[in-house]
Length: 336
Image (cartoon, rainbow, N blue to C red):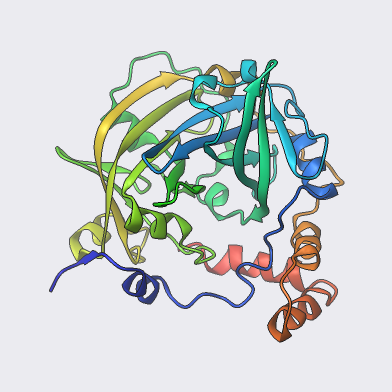
């Protein structure tokens, strides 16, 4: 019996049924909450890609280094990106924005509209808040600054990493960037031929996995919270339910349901000026006016879906305290 996953139906059976409100949190523009999030964010991960593949870079600096003049546009200053050369007009764009002290992250996807006049212009097509599980599992904001200077091999960096972002792109060139977090040794494992990345409980959108089934090339950037080095990996992926691989990546008595095997085409450890400029650690207190539960609720209301199920979801999130309670319970009981 094969353990390799090669089709979407098998993938969904492995991960579990999609929750009804899965896409209800996704909006097609930057609302006032998203703009405020960008104003408070000193760091973002960016993916630029097309049907041939995708690459990752990092942007960082003072909070609010990105600019948005309209609800459907986003401007990035090239000087704040580690590698602005990756951005080319017409490419798909994906991003993950962090705010110090908050576990949730903001994801913004779209297309590079142009690169000119000292700006990278983005046409926004998706915006939504991502749950806090990756940052919780990695103890991201609990880290202290760690000015590591000793050289690290990619294998050593993989073993120490606790947080990463995974960039994928489908056959049509639409890009997606997803955060992952785990204790050191459980996030990435390396052997003589491959890297192994577990899947932990999340929102079951499986966008990254669906992309990999269509087009297996990926990029990832991994780090140790507190440090400003990144492990950059480009390679090809296969999805597997192999029992031995799952057992090696168990946390406690809970193995992942599936594992991504990555055959690296290139991997290297590099300093990140953008990560250093963001000065994330020690983490500051998050802004009082950013409330993730309220953002989830607002985005459900703004979502353009119609029909009975959409109406039921909107009614449910309108119940006072329900979203916050649901998030707290999910973060407490469903990390692994």
